[in-house]
Image (tube, rainbow, N blue to C red; front, side, top):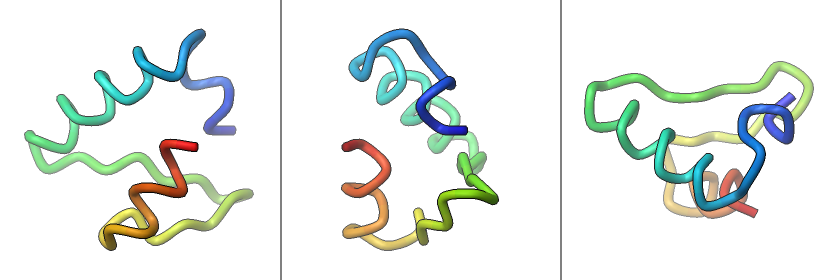
Length: 46
């Protein structure tokens, strides 16, 4: 689950942005969010 990705929200966003800059997107099977859209990216950060 996405909530187990990192201990803090800020750290999760930092890791996600670093991965994204290399073309890697974090996706969850249980929490389907379209991370390719602005609203999906926002939802994932919540």
